Length: 165
Length: 341
Image (cartoon, rainbow over all chains, first blue to last red; front, side, top):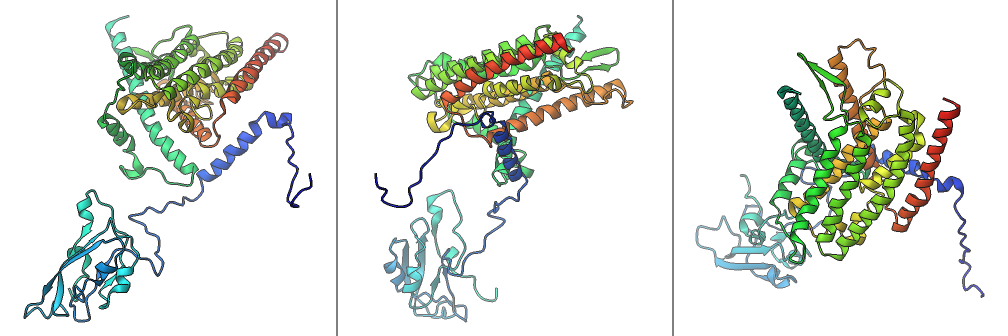
């Protein structure tokens, strides 16, 4: 038959020679290769203590930002929840009372802001949707936990630490 | 034989039993650690410093797990299987000479549970009993995979026992005794049997791999084809016993190999160091354990190097290669003894 390509190669299967059929030299060579690996430097990264560097645009756990005066930027407009393809974000808004101007930047704020980390796909659309630059996915990897309910992160875990404290 | 002698024997039995259990326990740890090192990993290192407590954690896990006995199994035999496996694994160490005599006060304690004059045959008997645990367990599970594993185990053990026995015959021709104590004593200093029986040792160690169901001969329990083989249906500590008996078997076969071919408790210049007799004995025990640990390491080393045999290749190697080689070894040994020695 005429070969269609020039890549065809005749495969030869020669019977093993006596030296090869003893197998012992091959086994000894194999053992020496594994022994070399025994003393090689280990590649394991011991995760919780030792971490690999993240890339610039790594998207991790969310944080709700504060402005220069330490006030929460979020105004509970709900655009992040709307943009979320996984429907992981819920919030309840509240009106700012007089005397709370140092806590919240706008007249409206999120009294409850919850992200279900099991639903979140870390796409970053909330970050893009936010008109107030209030949410960023600049945190670490979300840690493991035992209960599903513990993966619903409230404001206690999401809001940035207050300034000067 | 007075009460004191019986008590001493009892203590010796218990100590050897405990040592073999501890060695088996830490072999599981060593296996994971060695495997990790061969694969450029670190291995278990969370339970205690360097993961030293890992075997305890594993043991606790095994005991806490749910015990499942399949409804369609033969319950009595299902329980007998692992019991038999661990029992036969443990009694093999009874005839191993762990050292010379220890003198405490007026008592002279030979570090061997019993010096029966057919020690080698006893070991063979126990080893061939060992397959019954696997066989019965696999059959009683009433599961295709278990049964296949059990059948493989039985045929593999029977095939390799022949070659093993034949390789030992050549050794017995040169030593002229079946007592392990005498065999060990004959190899005083540097006169190890490996020098006169290299081919016999090679056949023996290959067969030892097959008898302990270790890779590359781990066909009875190969995970990829038989999802665990004979212990597919086992859970909890019954599974633990099967896994444990494999490690005890490794320990005992390491001890047998060290005793038969590598001088047992003998080490070079042992009586030229000017130490007291007890110290020489203790050092001898240490030397024997060093040899055993080397063999256990070697078992693991081979496991993480060689791939598993195909079943027909296994039978081919056993019947067409090892048995003729062993017979040739007997002939060569006979000629050598008649004409040269």
